[in-house]
Image (cartoon, rainbow, N blue to C red; front, side):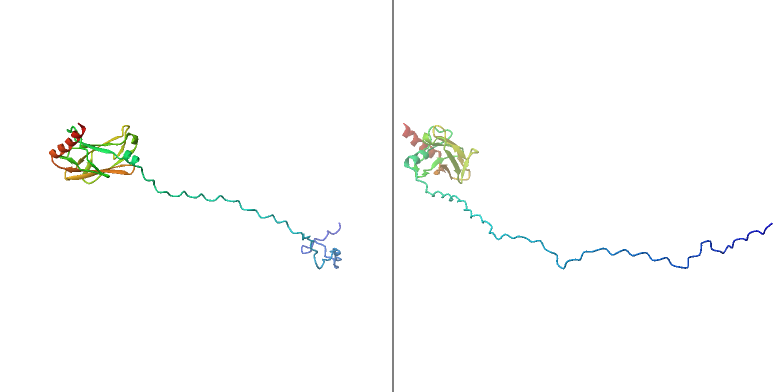
Length: 210
């Protein structure tokens, strides 16, 4: 029999030994053809029109109407004698147990005193011309006079009449009340006196009506 083959060397390298010469270098790519950059970039040409632009004609401002002329202030025309008579009442003062009223004499816009003997209410009757119906009468009691009704505003009725009830205060011997109809004022004064004086004033009215 022949000799056995020799055992491999464990320290031996299995890869083949590198070649002793280097591979040839790879060829370089040819340089790309790049167009040359011009020194200046051409700008687009803008055509500017030298023709003047049309200007619209000026618009006229609208004409505003003239402000209205305020009406002239005219003084209130004075009332005629007929108007004054129509708005000026005759005044009667009635006591509860009297048969005739006291009719105080008129002195301009004031009346002579009406006499009261106690603190009981008396009724004052204002008699206007019937053409004054519907007119408003404002009652303004003065010091010492007390109204016996809640309203101080009266209305002339269809026959030209207004009625108001009042009395003289306990602590006063005089008092007054004013009646205003369309700016015409009538003032009545109440004065405390004896019962005989009250009856004497009523008798004057009774004598005038006989």
